[in-house]
Image 1 (cartoon, rainbow, N blue to C red):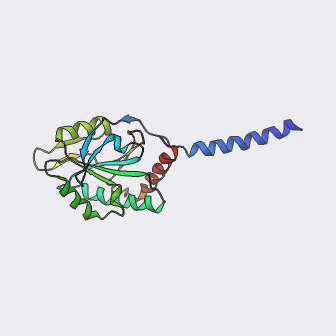
Image 2 (tube, rainbow, N blue to C red):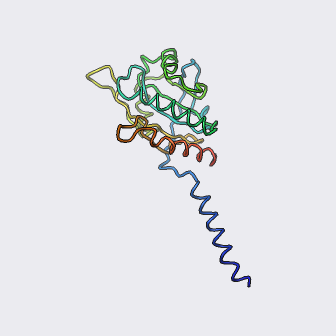
Image 3 (cartoon, rainbow, N blue to C red):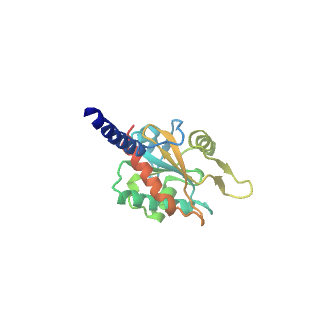
Length: 203
């Protein structure tokens, strides 16, 4: 009799385990972020070590941007609203300016205020470095590009939102601007779910 009971029990266990494993966070890649020590919009130093222990979402923007930065900032604020709605707390939003000569802490604070995020204590708007430094950091640690436009005062940069784990590794990229064909809201829930799963997974 026991032999006949074993098979159903095993099937139930397999189903339970497969359900659990399907809820595990699965990174697309794993790239270690190089150490940095920059200045945030409040004039305080922020280092990579300060951010470790939290999941964070990075982006590269600048205040004089005439293209995708505005939509990216708006979308990031919308993403934060969605995280708050889901009760997610252990995260940071980190914005690196690609125009550090112009974007002082005060300028970045004003820029952040323009988008009125629901909880600006979660945001780090970073500056206080040379542009060559951010070009290298973007390329080597975030799989994204930063370059000057020789024909204007604009800076060419990637439009990704970049998910970073608790150990300071970039693990996923998302389109931070969206397109008319695929608006940001269409996949915002996927980002929220990834953040939640990565937090649950822990360091």
